[in-house]
Length: 76
Image (cartoon, rainbow, N blue to C red):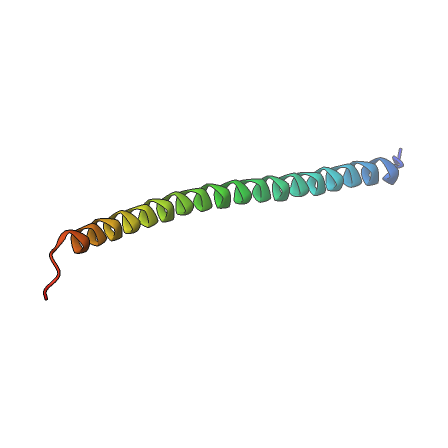
């Protein structure tokens, strides 16, 4: 006896699978965006810390050299 296959069940399963795949893609894109943002924030913080330290070292060395110039007797 021939069987009649219901295509609506296959179609609903296929659309559910497609919908899950699309949701997974959106979740992964969102997750990648969060990870990228976090990584950029971390790198910016490290760069800022480095620049602050470099700036502090520059100003400390500049003030030391200024003190050295002020304490040296001026030639007349």
